[in-house]
Length: 298
Image (tube, rainbow, N blue to C red; front, top):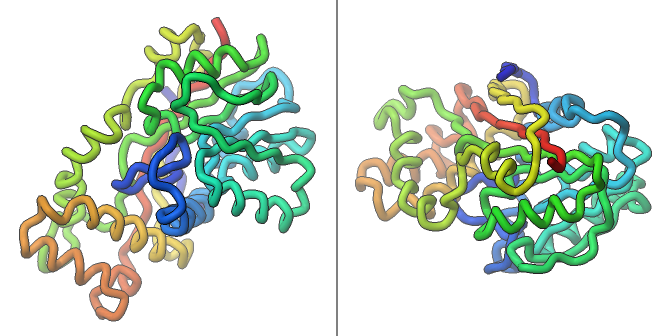
């Protein structure tokens, strides 16, 4: 499996909370915080997303694309840029995310190439999404309660020679070096370990091998690629905000399982007024990994 190591700025909500872009649930009150993380993820990882769209094993440029669990549009706009003759149907359960996506489309002058559809992708029946040449699902499949059914639905709507691209994350991105913070080395890993029970219950498909699931749903895997991304903090000031927003959400889930000392150290990192806070650290980096499966109907 080829692997690339990128050190340039590039999900999807990769926080401990289950986001609403794939299915129903608490929505409007959490849209704002999720949208902020989604937008930061898109900004920081833009080049990475573009590299994946360029890699896709397509026989011709797609004209009709469906972006499943589109969030605020990171994939939608990367696909529109990569394929200038394409139209994208952006599907999400969050009305707030879709509203932001439409505003961005207008700002970029591509509103005529985007259709938004509000839908719960865990529902048995999906709305009419046309017959796309390319279906893109980035960091959304693992949030499905019924992913096998969703995969079958994709197979039914995909054009006979169309491509299905599944982009999934191995886990939450890491931001701090292992020896940080100085008073509680290894804190970040312990905070993530403290969320394991939550994830096992709410996002059990995170980190899954989607190859067998795709095959069982009637797809043939055409190619697979793992991308390892390292982006040093000095490359973008957005990395500090991305780290802060992300770890703030981890804290909400991890807090009950953390020691008082770890929780105090994490709160100091998240304190925007502290001289030891995340936003003032010079050693931040984004370290994450994505696997992409490109599949066609068997």
